[in-house]
Structures are given as C-alpha cells and as structure tokens.
Length: 176
Image 1 (cartoon, one colour):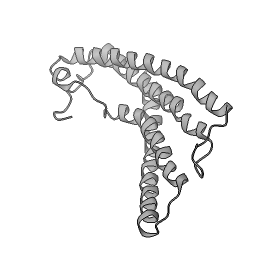
Image 2: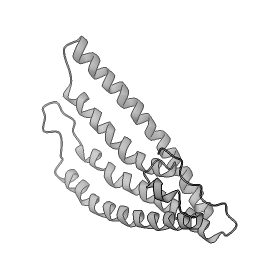
Image 3: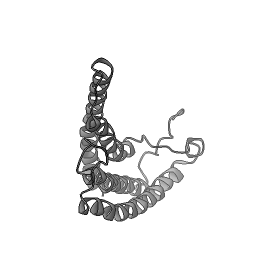
C-alpha cells in the first residue's frame, strides 16, 4: 500500500510542477494584455479569454498538488489538540469522504463536457476562443487527479493507522 501511495504522490507532484507553468504563462498573457491595452490602445478578446482559460487548469489541476503538500484547510484549532491516533483516524475518514465526493463529481462532470463537445461550444464573443469543451474537460481531469491524490492520502493514512510503531502525525502548524 505504501509503495502505491508513494508512486501516486510522485505522479501528482509532477503534475503540480507542470501546472505551475500555467501560472507563469498566465502572468505573461496578463502582462501582454496590459501592454496592449495601455500602451497601444488595443486588445484581443481571445487573449482576454485565454486568461481565464489558463486559470481553470491552475485551479483544477492544482487541487491535487495542494492536497499532496498539505495546502488545504483543516480546523487546526481542534485537529492539533487531538491525540495522534485520532488525527490519523480523522485523516483516513476525511480522505475516504473526499474520494467518494470527488468520484461523484467526476461522474457528473463528464456529461457536461460531452454536451459541450457535441454542440461545438465556443465563445459567444466575436474573436473569442473556440473549443470551449477543452476548458470544460479540465473538470473531470482535475477531479480525477484529486481522486488519485485522495486515494494516495487514504492509503498513507491507513498505513499509519495500522502501523503501531509509526511516528504520530504531527500537529498542524499554527497560523495556517
């Protein structure tokens, strides 16, 4: 179980690092749009739409990376005060629940993407981007990556629960 969890973690870490380049690209596109607008008094609808088209992968593909690196929100005021065994149990149960909810979201988002693809959805604005289904495809893809990471976290939590010699889960740092 631990080996599988570690492999899944490494995969998500790589995806997260690649997703970081979307953030860099977004900054470049925004800077270019500002340059066009304020110095050349022109602009492009497609370039403006590209900004939010880049934001979707940053958010949706970055969810799993945030979960991997413990960048998600916990109720630290309570969690940090629980004994190590209770924290491990909370981690396992919460990851099981996250996995179930995310699996449902994947199931519900696929028809949404299929419909967008079937009708050839594109921007309603003149000069806007086409192939909007590709943007909407970020939903099931992002949720699938989140499912992979939540399963890896669940496996890690189960291993920690079963291993009586494992170090206790550290309390969450203050101020998060």
